[in-house]
Length: 483
Image (cartoon, rainbow, N blue to C red; front, side, top):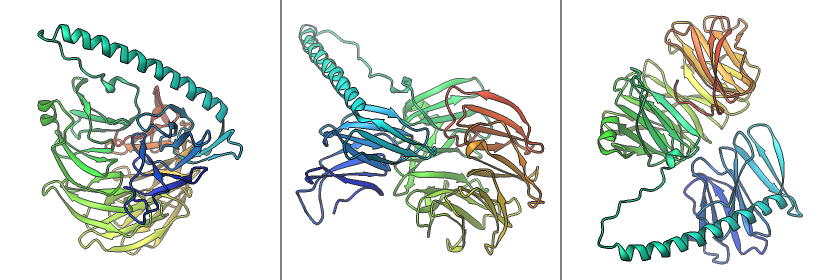
């Protein structure tokens, strides 16, 4: 047996059968010695890590000299099988999650397939040539560094009695990086962002100033400000931990150390939402559970167990009596908020990406990759309406004041339904040319703000669906926790 920290997605033997490589959660591939043949307690030879998320597939290439691993953010990393310190080459293969990699029998071609609905074939002879170039560059740099080190040692010996200015390490926050999530405080005073490499930035929005830039203990998949305390925000991180940050303390210490760690999931957290009481919040994780937490007692109140796969979204009704969860096991489930018992489970034909409740708490709403949003009786689980969409749906939200349900998804799909007349045709919001990953209402629901992978943020009239304007972005909008 070979024990991993997270779910294992792929496994391959070397050609001689002496080693085994596995890909798993926490963006990790692991190399094992198959010749040990212990029943338990096998230690890995080395690990290959790419940052955050999960590694769904891996392959051995170049006669097992190199390892290629597919990341959750669409990049294929190539490693020297004998060196797990740093990847030799990075290939921006897809714009979405890469689900599978495979090598042709002659070892000349690599094929990748992704969430972006594309299958791509790569010439491994070209990849091998680029790897050799990169190795040569690194060897040259290493020799230069060794020579510099020798010179430095001699200079240090001569100047040992003199004070020397401390040389700081390179600021990794200045390097190009994908912003994983952003959040704004309820009063609009502060903003916080976390990147793919764990760079945490805190902003004063009134002055448009960067207050702090530091390293986070782990990449924050989702960040939410406390609804009543603008100095406090909570992060759900890729290592499964729930971390609470206080901006005053961060500014005082000048570090990304959190104020409190109040608990954890076994694996990466995918969603975090505050409940209506402003005291509790609910999280969903790829460890197949959802959990209810209290910010006052700094403790976990409840674990919801029943899903067979990752929980992508979770929410509590405004009456605080029910919880709803959405999962990649193709179900939406409603739970009793006091006992934690499952009330019912509703089925979709594909992953369920998002869920919420209607303002009166009588309906649960789910959005799925089967191109539907479904409206359920919150207490009994009866499917009341199947709202057909033009593409797979990724989000859903309800504006109580406007009486509108909004859902967005792939291929620029954006739909608005009247929650008092679900049978009436929906209104389409047209303008985006790629998947819409974030869609939120203005305060009273008259307008919607959307962020898309087409590289734009747009404002829509929720009654007519008209696009009122677009803000072009330099890069696609992969994920926003709030706008």
